[in-house]
Image 1 (cartoon, rainbow, N blue to C red):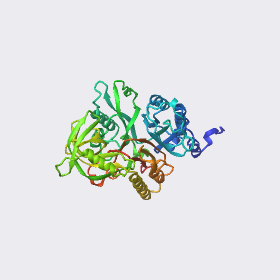
Image 2 (spheres, rainbow, N blue to C red):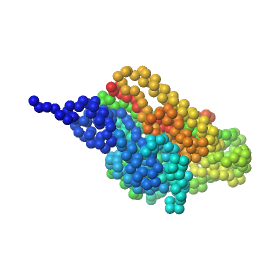
Image 3 (spheres, helix red, strand yellow):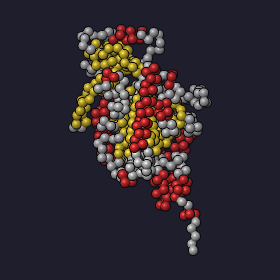
Image 4 (cartoon, rainbow, N blue to C red):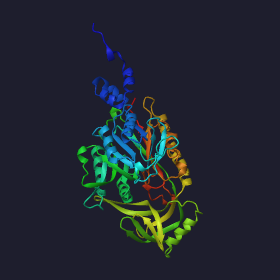
Length: 522
């Protein structure tokens, strides 16, 4: 009689326990073995996010450290986002990262003003802001360190890799021809997002978008068009002031030699070929906001607006319902005096803009709240960073405020706590033989100028306190993109509730990814 030997005597439960401990590459090899494929599919059946941070001053070593961490457990990457310090070479970093991932994985590599994530060595959650300028010379700088001995120079990386069954993902660029540098192909960008979504999904708009914009372009009009074009339930988050490279899932579409990249959207669309019978549930995106600006003063109205190239605008204003033109320079002086010698906060005007948006042959109208930094005044004029304000637009003044930022962090905490409680209530109603709904990952986009009170992991507090142990990563920037349903992204001012804001300042945007299992899951 022939005797059984080896793994044929081992139960599936034991094999599953062994395979679940393999690193990602070994697990992928095991999944190719026919007798283990079913077990591997059971291990990697739910969505997963893995992330890691390294402050190693060597780019190659830092990349190796984060990859060793994120690939230490089974995962099949569907997308990757890497945010690096500006003293690292963006081109070299992007090449190293794409080489370590399969050729079909969409990748975005972004140079940032700081990073958030779990340290690859210690698993400690870190929030790292970098203060050095882009022009700093490495050889002329001393290696300053923080209290934990890590370099404060902007060298470091946070890597996020995601497995999202039931979704299709691609990185879709917003291109600008080098021959006509002032014209970005925004309509084509939106059509590309729509075409990808329709080709893979039964939905007209994607479930979520993680967006990176070039810091040298104005993202406000682009976001206004996206807001008009996308379904109300499409969540959009990101960094409007980045410097990035991207790779699409289809390598034939990665030649951008004759164009500039103004933005890139990592698009998550629901897979129309997903079979509920296969036990694949639904991934959901949630967003909430901690604002850091507060309004003050009466409602004003723009009267005369003079655009200076694409850089700034000079405008005169009057009180709403009045005719007298205000003394812009004098008013700004009075505002400065109100802070009684304290360090002057950043000053903005929040402008309500009612605009017609044309996407292809479709047109729609929507009120948006857009922020413009106040650069100064000259006699009756206010000098504003950016263009796009029109005569008749109404606005309020806003200023950055650390107390508001601290208070709104509490609001974000409560919003995420409500999301957690809602999930618990749903789980109580689910049959006992069905897997529970869970939060499996989070991303943070936070302003690098939030203030000294936010230098001790305070920005990550609302997420990590509500979802301890859930993978979390983030980036510090100077323009935070946040757009969700009307209940998930609060407005900076209750009086402006009819106008949605997509680009925020001195704020933190939280993206939460949750999974609702299919009813057939066991």
